[in-house]
Length: 77
Image (tube, rainbow, N blue to C red; front, side, top):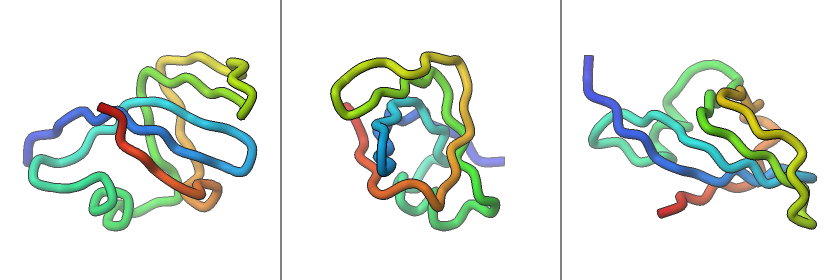
């Protein structure tokens, strides 16, 4: 099994901004990972969900996000 790297990302949905950590195989970009992984959900760790006014809606250790609800993805350094 290949090694995994933790990448902090921001997922944008129609109503929220979801910041969390995704585990990606070494040598893969986040976009490669999202396009190649099977299943409808993106598992995230260390998650904070905010509305677009900046109010925290949810703060949790783990969350699965439906890929079909994601409008854009940005890595956060």
